[in-house]
Length: 414
Image 1 (cartoon, rainbow, N blue to C red):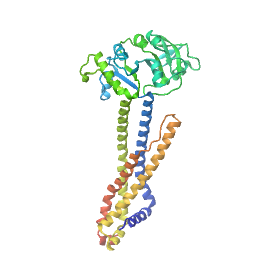
Image 2 (spheres, rainbow, N blue to C red; image 1 turned 135 degrees about the vertical axis):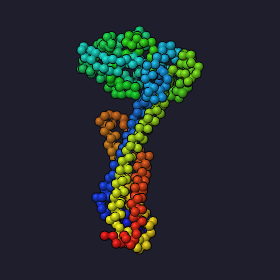
Image 3 (tube, rainbow, N blue to C red; image 1 turned 90 degrees about the vertical axis):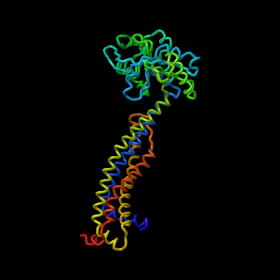
Image 4 (spheres, helix red, strand yellow; image 1 turned 120 degrees about the vertical axis):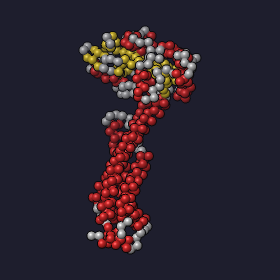
């Protein structure tokens, strides 16, 4: 039998029972659509997160206390570590130690709420430098101003608040010059950020930023920092700056063996690679879970093909009587099975792409996210290949049943 003959015969066999063939295709279609959609959304999420991180700038370097966590159980140790102190900040700001650094800003997380005249809101309170924040993130107050080194050195009780904080505490009233209370201490509002949304570090709209010296002395009563953020002169020298930072901190902490480090350094590129790995693993896991549905679709293909073999028993007997071999019959039914699943796979890819386009439009327009449409080439190749493989595997048993039938018994079949 030629390829064209097999193809024409297969199409005739499948179109004889259109509804049955359509339902069989539907089982494969749903599985492939889900795979394409998950891989597309995973790719879009990866692009979104990476673009958000890159907005911070490749020059940003974050120093965190404690051992670098190897897994979720290690995170608690880094949250309560106290290995980064003002001595480290002073060492890092000396040009001779890290000549490539242009800015150093310790940061502290302050738990608690902010209140104003009976109104209370629980924002994200940061002891930080608004000057470093503005230079790094490009975020500036819509009203008022930021605080500078003078306020940090004098431990001033000033604050710059996000738009959501202003709305919750002040409503339509002007917040500039008013005082909010944090942990029983009054802070004068000197600036209000515009509606900026989220960054990889925090949601600016829900943030209160105060001088880190004020937070350290009056609110937390500690002599260490939760992290130190730094910025290199350019992205090209980040690796050298990281080495200088590590050498400086080891000298400051009297550490000779790098394995004994009580701090770790993260760059934006390192963070990007970590997130890519995490998203990739999660996407692959979900893809495997969804792919299980293809097994159900494959069983449906097997059942339909067994029914088809039974209905076409006399046809099989007649073809064998006219000289068709077992291999001819086997290949014919396998061909039909593969065509069914490949059609389902192709339609699944097309529908998955359309749904992905709709998802990208909804997320970008409705939720105002910088969500980009991504076409998963590997997902399409995988979906097409898997659908053909499902047809081959689950069509093999019915095809063998057809091929092994005796022509005499098949011709007598009623």
